[in-house]
Amino acid sequence: MAHSAQAIANYFLNKEVPITMLQLQRLLLISQGFYLATHDVPLFEEKVSETKGFISSIWNEFKFLADSPIPIGSHSFVYIPGDGLVIPEVRAEEALKILGKVWEIYGNLPLETLHNV
Image 1 (cartoon, rainbow, N blue to C red):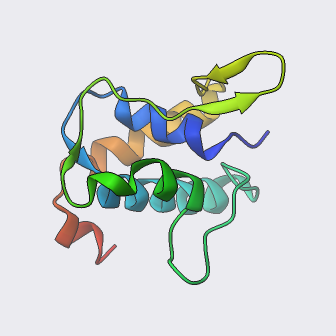
Image 2 (image 1 turned 30 degrees about the horizontal axis):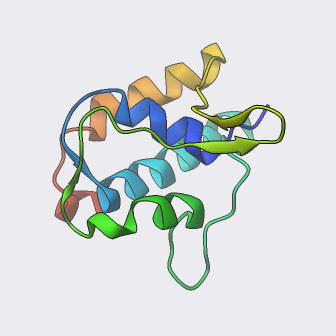
């Protein structure tokens, strides 16, 4: 089952470690790659923008911060008709395992290093 890019972003944002939008984008792309390699299906549904190389919804939500860290306690939201704005979460155990591994390996790396992954 694919998740929303916002749910995956929230996994990393919930770590309460300063992270920039660009670092978050790289962690999303790395997570997608890990999941595709191990499960043959995408982790999240949203496509990567061919012109930017980013997940557009996450880019649009946090681009105003530029290179500044996303404030601790921030979340990515989705709008669900009838429910309004919702903070999506990852609940699938297999996805959480992959995200945990990605965070363990890449979570504390600077952006310059993440760009080379």
